[in-house]
Amino acid sequence: MADLFTTVVTSPLARRAGVPQPTQLRRYTPGGPLVEGPVLVTGGGRFEKSMRVRLDQAGVAVVSAAEDTRDRLGAIIVDLSAALDPAELAQLRTIEPGVKRLARNARVVVIGTDPATLTDVTEVTTQRALEGFSRSLAKELRLGATGNLVLAQGEAHDGVWSAVEFLLSGRSAYVDGQVVRVAETMGTNGDSVKPLGGKVAVVTGAARGIGAEIARVLGRDGATVVAVDVPAAGEALAKVANEVRGTAVQLDVTAADAGSRIVRHATQRHGAIDIVIHNAGITRDKLFVNLDEDRWDSVIDVNLRSILRMNEAILGEGGLGQGGRIVCLSSIAGIAGNRGQTNYGASKAGVIGLVTALAAQVRDRGITVNAVAPGFIETEMTARVPFATREMGRRINSLQQGGLPRDVAETIAWLSQPGAAAVTGQVVRVCGQSWLGA
Ligand code: NAD
Image (cartoon, rainbow, N blue to C red; front, top):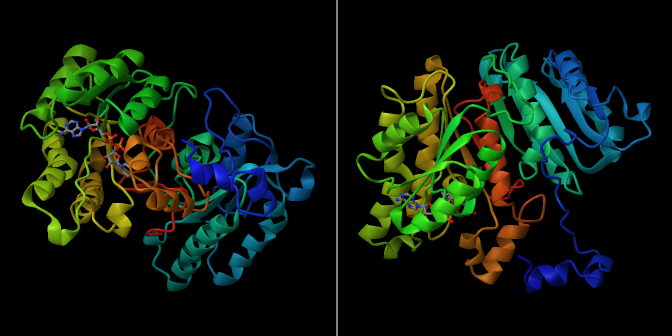
């Protein structure tokens, strides 16, 4: 989607003039290497050993210092989960030679202890400091490299590995400057190439855009996909369903019986319902003072109330069981707010409340509920945004480019994995560390 501005800023002349250039991001290919180059693992925390073992199992070379290899580093994992005092934060400085030797599209992952599980003021202070460090370092990294923080509860080795594996891989290309919390729940993936094998996944709003890409990525990862969209999008919907060898259901998600129809279709046609992605969403932008009733009601109904209604059936008798997954689409507009989007911002912030509250309610049933909040994603919707606003949206993030629908889909696919059982009630931003609401 190169336009005049992109062509100009990426021209040889602009390069010579030192205009910052977006880097082609490393994206996931099934069966490909987890990370390109050896991984430096350090910090002395309680996860360091298990991370080394799992990296080794994944065929990744592990080193203890940047000087131990002549290759550029694919990633640095620094585990400060055991740090109790701010003086110990100085250990973060030991990764400096490694940061200088990071490869293109490398990763820095900091592991800490979730401050919510601590009570000692000094310990909480120390662990909270990791957030400011990793978000700031992420802003300094260049050439497609990202920096993220994993905060663990107790001995959450499975959960930490699931998050670390995602963050190291090309699946997380546009996830930058984020904090992922993991609980002690156990959960591991069977097949590394088809982690969703045997699962039945429902995707709403699947006829185009991000929803169609979610259907493709879930299908690629082994899920049987039920693609849902309005009857008016029937033709495009059928195409997506055929492409992923799934089935299509034409319905409006705001219909009173939408949830029960989805559950009935999935269980009758495919024998189960394991994963639900609430992706269908609309915008009806207007300044607040010019907003009419229809623009307000339709956005709240499609983006928010329909999810609450459908969840009643999805979580009811015959719906999601043990290991079930719900992922909702939020937006950075729901975090930072956006001019002209009071209705949309309200709906997408509401989604965050929904996942937080619902996750706690269904935790003991082994069901996780999370949200993904995309930033600027290259879609038909954003292609229609006025030129200056669009270019601004593309550039105001640490990776200096828009994300792809695929990046959102990859994060959703990760949260849907059996291995991600320990991640619930979270909002993962797929925004390249956007400056908005950071
Ligand atoms: P899109 O408009 O391209 O696609 C949305 C799909 O949802 C369409 O196929 C549409 O027919 C379907 N849909 C709308 N109302 C429906 C209803 N009542 N019942 C069933 N299906 C319905 O949008 P997109 O850009 O792909 O966005 C997908 C999701 O991601 C939305 O929830 C959106 O708010 C969110 N999001 C997008 C971006 C972005 O940059 N594109 C950023 C943040 C969040």
